Length: 333
Image 1 (cartoon, rainbow, N blue to C red):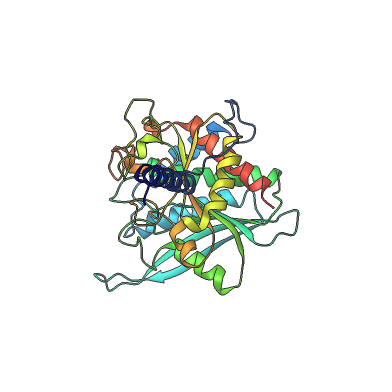
Image 2 (tube, rainbow, N blue to C red):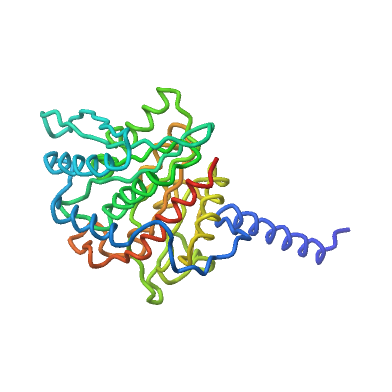
């Protein structure tokens, strides 16, 4: 004879355990306390701001058709990287578009930093420098690019444990997005063809927009706001279920670096936004990868519009993000 009450209790316990397992896998809670430090040690806010205004004002339309400005931007990035690394190169490729007869040339820009130790695999840190719709794209994604430039400056004087490859990608935005024309696809494919192991790829895509207003943060799935904040005053670390360990490690180190709140999510690509950047191409080639982002259109209506301007960004928080990335690189071995 069945004990209905006992069966109900067992079912409830099973559901609770299931919810806890899913919550743990998705949100990656950690025992690492959030640092209370507002001061950062290495990244300089003014450098980020100077580079961002320079790129936005000198290289405004970085759309896929405007190869002249794209290549001028690549040259600027190359010249900045060359101040800090002796190994800087263009990764050049050519492609055409279905609606164009002309063949276009595009360039990734790569700076290498030799590690102090012998590690199994390199660390890749990347961000795309192209923009969408003829806009200058202060947050999307000049914010990520200037983070790379400042990170390169710091790595020159503080060599990492493992080899680090910093990459400024071209062609992340539509119509290249989710195709083999993406600069990050070209880069990840090359690494695989050369048999190069990757410890982790960290992609920076929009790290500059924050708000303390209530309900300024929205989410792609109902009930996410039961765990995640309603205020857009945090940075996120995003990965799929194959990268649970990497997301946890990146999140933990960044939490211990500054008082900028760090949240994370591991989820399948069917959740909107999970694979919406260059990290998707490292997943495609079997490499561990995470995206660090302010969540883009889930908190800002400036996304892909002329309103995405330098004066809308929080440079202090951007510096805290890059300081956190530097600490991740420093501690990985």
